[in-house]
Amino acid sequence: MAIVTRSQMEQWTWPPRYDERYRPADGEPYWFPIRETMPPDEREAAIVERIREVMRWCWDRAPFYRRKWAEAGIHPDAIRSLDDLGRVPVVTKEELRADQAVHPPFGDYRCVDDAEVAHVHGTSGTTGRPTAFGISRDDWRMIANEHARVQWAMGLRPADTVFIGSFFSLYMGSWGTLIGAERLGARVFPFGAGAQGQTRRAVVWLAEMRPSAFYGTPSYALHLAEVAREMGIDPRTFGIRILFFSGEPGASIPTIRRRIEELYGGLAFDSGSMAEISPWMNLGESSARAGMLVWQDIVYTEVCDPRTHQRVPYGAEGTPVYTTLHRRSQPMIRLLSNDLTRWEAGPSPCGRTYPILPRGIYGRIDDMFTVRGENVYPSAIDEIVMALPGYGGEHRIVISRQEAMDELAVRIEYDPATAAAGDTAVAALQRRAETEIRTVLGVGARVVPVPPGTLERTEFKARRVIDDRELWREARRSV
Image 1 (tube, rainbow, N blue to C red):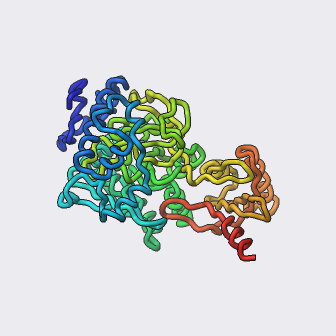
Image 2 (tube, helix red, strand yellow):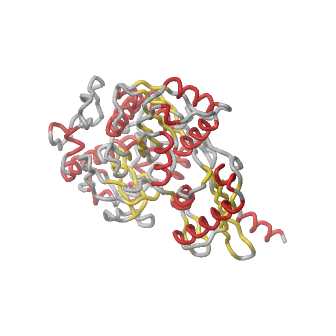
Image 3 (cartoon, rainbow, N blue to C red):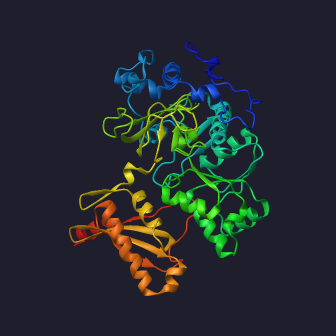
């Protein structure tokens, strides 16, 4: 590339090349000391050049991007600054699905020959047409190398054993964790999740093997700990020192993080962005645990106004927009996430000079619902109820309509100790929950306490919101 700074920025090339023999000494806190601690303006100068290279790659090989940019009057050579990138139109997941429907299976934003696609992953398609990820062999190794960097920053080392407690299917979370831990040199235990009875077997294996690290979703970690205690096993005896997560908000929410750490006796770390832009660990915490770092030299990330798609200043809230800097097979240029976060300039206390998401990714714009004029995010309710004394480990958020008014109800399981204390304790939990929800959210909710074990547990991403308002509307239309 034309701009190279500070010892070639440690293997900063296009197309990407990696020395698979390289690994830092165990006592070294950084995978790439120069790239991770250099002044941000130096790194950004190299990123601008890389973005131009990736966009040229797309212009020459992907009709999808050439059409889109030509319509907007954009050419890769015009990108001379990160401000210029803001003129490039965003890409939505709906556009990707539509393009794949017309140009199956990978869309004409694929930039390598079909024969180079070595791995096929994708979305489940539960909410529409699935999106196929065609990943080249080179990109697969790139994901492994970049994930190893982030896992190293969390404190994982070759002596660790990583228990992977999430689905091994099309889901990229499990596979990205696996290949990153392997590249780092750690022992991997790809246990999986989802089969009937598998959680009880996971408890037995964890007690037997005592891995030092765990990966999954926060919801599953809480469920796993609950099952272990039902079996008479204290999760702390597993000996897990690092628990790292992706797939849903939670690991950055203080009450959920604290609960996980108390249950297991280890440290919790948050990570993850979108499977479409893998390496998805481009957002990931370091040992400082001051929030998820925005690893800008892995995937360049802008936090943008959801309406204008222009970058917001540090300290402001917005939605992440991602541009891959290493993907050759299906590059993403300004992919709109519709997630919600707030960013700060950094540096992190660990010495890395990346921006920081102090609260991680704490919701999705399209998950937000409005009740009587107030915007409510499910993660805000999660944080409130999970901090309640007497909370039994699960809850549901129900939005309904009575006549012309939206109503919010929260079903909260109480724990066995509250059940044993009787109706007075249950009523006290209900009053406290209603008071705190009204105080924090500015909207009232009817809290319905339910006995322990009433609500279904999850082995993957939590789905706690039930919106019954459309049923009311349909009923009214049929009258």
